[in-house]
Length: 396
Image 1 (cartoon, one colour):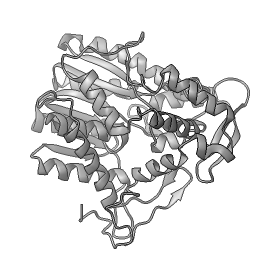
Image 2 (cartoon, rainbow, N blue to C red):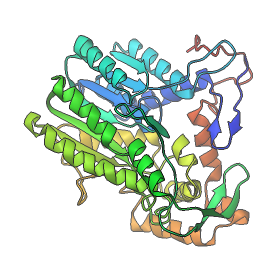
Image 3 (tube, rainbow, N blue to C red):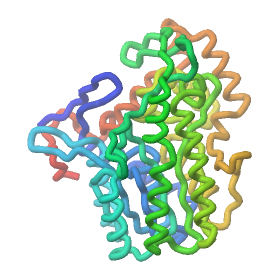
Image 4 (cartoon, rainbow, N blue to C red):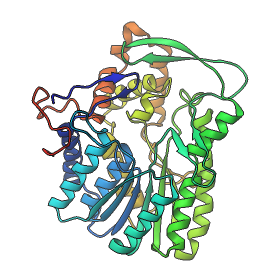
């Protein structure tokens, strides 16, 4: 079949197998050319949420930067003869093929990472294949969670807090129109559900079960990813339902850190920079902020894409023996370049004057759209998008 992008809202319902493989290859190439790690810095790495974005980048850096054996967990849609898989399914396949070429252990479990059954499957795999884990990366990004203990299905909400409607500037990415959007505040139930889905409880479950099974190595590390961002996005992000979930991640970090003391281990939350992802594209306000931010950071020569950012995280903050750059809440701050006064002052200036007519001048919406399509394997020059392609991924 000839695979073309089919976009519905903030979701692309198709993915190109060879484009996804190319995306993985480019990230592998980057790590091999710009590696801040030494072989053996990480030996056995578990990545929860391994199929895209920062999770996939972490797996690539650990594997191809440090020679680590990697076990990944993600829930992805499999292909059929007439329908493509999700992009993450092709990413996982491409990663495993690349790892095999390099003689690296790589296994991916395609299952719900929130379930107790998946956790047991992972524990058995670690026992049989790896022995012990020295780094656990928690990078799950799901809008729903079936709670393994209660059986209740919780759905997250991206909403502001407070009593009144939030009126704030945003952009229609498809039409390129800057507009004001009115967002209703979250109910208490929506806040609670969002914390349950995106907070720290599941991270705690994972570390507790791995530790109790004796599968964490002495001195092990675990890191979960978060985003704080700029005051421009705080009303919908840090000061909204998402922020409540991220604060619960901080709570979990403290609890996990305490539990790992007996192993000489540590838990950290890493605050990362804004990127284009399926998640960020769905959050009102954020695409406009990202479009302005990217233009400013690119103009000033400090923009990092996903793989460059994670490579710097591993090389400067997670590498054994380094001194971590922590804030007052013991978070690793990787958003240092995004939040410099110089960058943020310019973004705020542009935010105050940007409108549909000058968006191309002040922002990088074209780059936002290109990055979005690349998530699904589209827009890579070496790929012939007019050619017949096997949706089962046999050509990867």
